[in-house]
Length: 166
Image 1 (cartoon, rainbow, N blue to C red):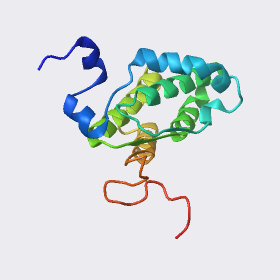
Image 2: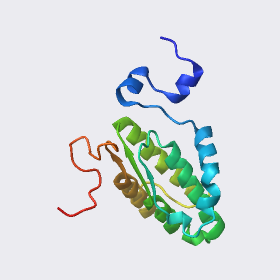
Image 3: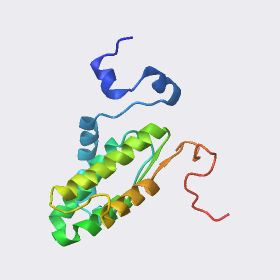
Image 4: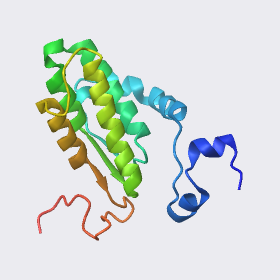
């Protein structure tokens, strides 16, 4: 079966669309959507650690774009010696839920890549042994979870994020 170029950018397979409703948002559309709210997000104080929840993370397009916006704010409003801590605050404020494991893995990898690129482009060491990278991996693993947002359950049937005591 032949796919058009537009389909290649939006879907991995027709089967995944049919089985899971999986359709990816292209980066240009993510940027357009963020442009609609950018002023509201970035002009308010506390944007760097403002909480964001992506209920259907896919491969992380929105997560990456939000993190990059937060890193731009860090560059503009904080001295470089605070960028490590502030980048972790930014990362800690981004949460996501994804139904499919391969997408969750892609989203996690994309988030880590953005954080590492931000720091290495500014000469900040962040190989696997650094506390910065260890903390970033921990936050990403904790905050990007696998589950079904519509049911509020993990694949094992547990609550994705129980906010009440049992």
